[in-house]
Image (tube, rainbow, N blue to C red; front, side, top):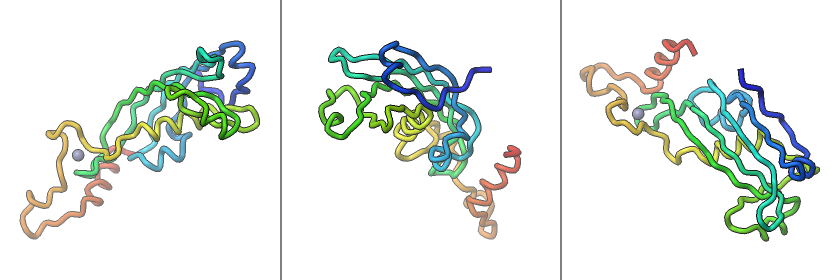
Length: 170
Ligand SMILES: [Zn+2]
């Protein structure tokens, strides 16, 4: 079983020692992300490396991979969606420093010298979500069955979803 990612890192010693933080974060432990998903199953695998950019700025680079359950906005059924995020953030302690970062670094504003690692992962996953979630494979996408059941059978897409969830046992 993979170890879980530490919640915090005091960034200065981590940057000086070029430390790495590897581990997993349960999706259920990222409530702002869960609000945007069909359910909270699974976890994200995370590998973060602290260090400096060529201009000696403190930074974190790394990779996040996750398999998320999204709700298709066309047929209202959940589907699995895999994502890999390559991140490069510059650690800054005030807004002025954020404005001075080179373009290839996204600013990560930290308070009290601490990087909140799980929140960083959560923010990156939220930013990486598709604007409109929908099945990429049209054959898997089955819009609400209003046309198949005849005129008198009108089932709300939400009750269809409910039935699916119960069948999945989630
Ligand atoms: Zn669909």
